[in-house]
Image (cartoon, rainbow, N blue to C red; front, side, top):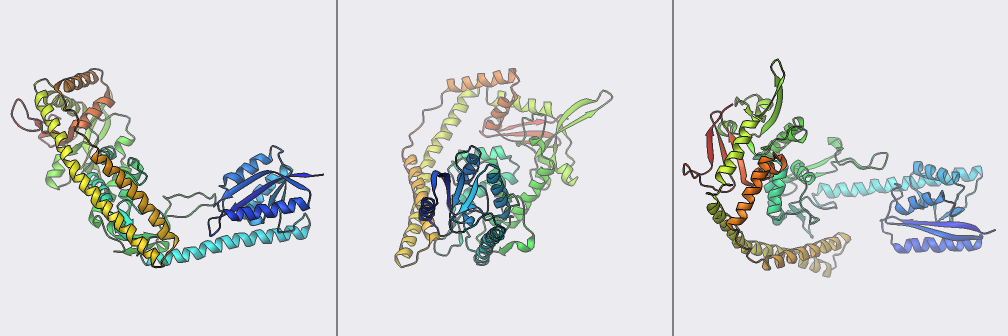
Length: 518
């Protein structure tokens, strides 16, 4: 009787190639011809470790074993099946329950008691080999870290890796992203506003996508920007084989080298940001608010700005008072709860939001201001066009630097210095060169945009009026964010700073200022 067999082959990423699976398959085919087996299904995992069951081919084989597609599973060695004793026992039991026998070509095992002992010994040795290899690799990685060299993976945004020394260097093109994120966050801007600013400047992530809120949080929490080299900060896999970047290791396991890499921001700025983020975490405000606050991220305390030089954001606050428990919704300075040092009174939400909307309608979205607004917008777009030339020069300079690094690597390889890291870096630089070249072509292809007409602005004015009439809060908030830079609240008055320098048609002054009513 000829038995149906499924072949499973695997190789890990440590110095093995596709030929490894081919050799396993040849050995399995020879075994099958000699023992009256016929291979009817093949499953493979390339560059996958056996310390985890996260292997597509392996899991598909286990799933198919329930369908009666084969009678036995042929493997070259037990360590191809698994190097984790728990996984090995778990999936062998599943195969056994499905009536499938596991056969190792090179290890003559049967169902005898002696074979059970030998099988357990072989599995234990395989797991020992895997964990011992990981330990030895970690030793080498730590030695590399003590020298403040790159240990693999993508460097943080704002840094590149010198292909010769393998140490971090500042990426001047990406440094602006880090500077923008830290400076805007300290100034009181929210994540959405920072993301819009980055998008307006065409800043993108390493993968060419817009920078997300998650990336902002990673940047703001990364101590490396202060010049501190850090390695082995996050914990490895848990018992389920899952990683968690938020799970930190004990301090004694973390390698820290002060001044081990070039600093982009100061330690004082970094500490200020950490305190602000911790405060926001305790009082998440808009992230968990049931109310819609039109000015969140825009409204700041003028008294704190005047007295301590920090424009603390004003947070939405809801409370119920009086016999009938009437609801009052206000904005209050976040510094009042954090340090108790601010005595700026709370401000009723409906008053300040209605005032800002009225000022938008009066200063921007009105018939009399439209000609001036059209001129300012066209002047702004013309200045953007003139900036294209500067952007072109910046890209050309960055491209020149990339080509210089590529030349250095090619020369190093030509002189006999070759390793996988150099090859990987060369590929990375070539890809970056293509991206910069594409951006340079895009700037050269930029043509002047058509002028913004007064009729276009009248249509926008009409649309804003409809949103206000319909009380469409999300759209109103979007309009406010587009034209209002900041709302400063003082004890005696409120100031609105527009993104465009609109002239007050009544008083002849820029911006807007009104006495405050609490």
